Image 1 (cartoon, each protein chain N blue to C red):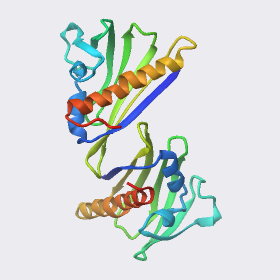
Image 2: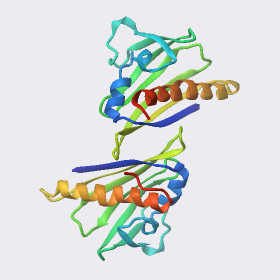
Image 3: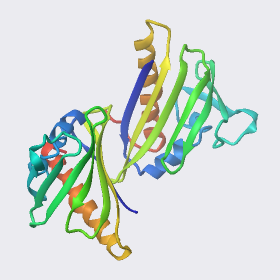
Image 4: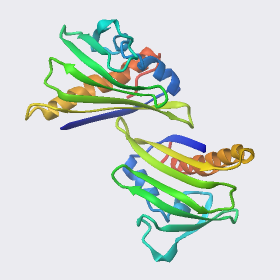
Length: 149
Length: 145
């Protein structure tokens, strides 16, 4: 199993960040890799077990299932069902924590998955940088913040 | 149960900060409110179950027992055995988590305890401000903003 973890500090209160990212069907509003997002069978996007279908900017499609959503813990987790990239048994967790002494947010995004032998590093880097770190940066832009670094 | 939760970002890697705080007998070295500390019965300070017996700068004496310690997850859990504070069943956890996009870490310090309702506000405020935030502020000064 490959494990990928990325984390950052977002300079906004945790409730504001959660309001943006909690919508399992809203990631096309802020993530640059995603062109279109739809929930299958007209389910609500906060219904556990719902499936979102993404069309990526390159035209490929993937499907992900919502496994956990907690407004109290401000976390959600999901798994990949179908993907053009060879990521198997992929389960990801998104967690937000308040930084109480300056009212900002600690954001952790991690996953575990299997890949074909020899492609572990390449795919871990792709997931970590192109999905998670790119997601952090686009949330900053979406919420009107300047980029870090 | 009353609950206290304080968190902060410290400008050093989690490993570096952990090095400074993992020693259960080291409070006087990094926390400004603590005057001196010893481990009872000459036990090693990383032996789960050991008891630290320490005095605050104001002279109060507190005994706390180490309940859990993880170098892998970088947390330390302990309970109060004796203190002048009007509370019982006090269990606290100090936890560090790496922030992967820079030389900094996320630090959390939380506690749960029982007390009478009229004492709760003072206890939650005092522990959160003087003990937890006071400790984080000292770490921030040490490691630089």
